[in-house]
Length: 184
Image 1 (spheres, helix red, strand yellow):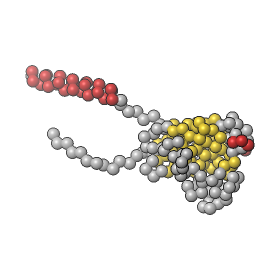
Image 2: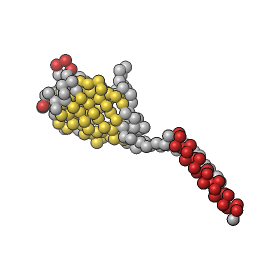
Image 3: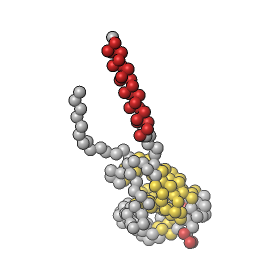
Image 4: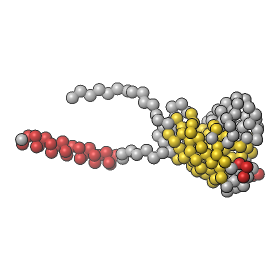
């Protein structure tokens, strides 16, 4: 039997993550986004803010803020990365984002193609400056949480013990087949 092994460039499939957070004012964030680890891009974003103490901020946030305009995309000493999402239509390049409703998640570890969940700090409110590098998150930061959860999809994998059991069963069937072939 000839077996050829070689390195093949694998491309990860974009994964859909779920979001859950409760903020200091009782507001809640829930929803999803798709992340492609190969290109570090977000798509299919749908994050809902509800039960806010500021009802004008409730709604569905779907527009990823451009990396060149918004805080949250770059790693820092405190966070590995992040996602900033606007509620209104995607902005034109270099548009003034002051006052735009926004939700932002900053991760304590990078999102990967392995689908692992990460914890995150999160804020929602309005862009406090034209480039949205700051968020007005209410008096005393009431629209902030340090315990947002970004959960990756469940990716079924076989554990070491189940792989060993599978190998044992496979070798048992092979031995049984060889014995039957030898006796025939």
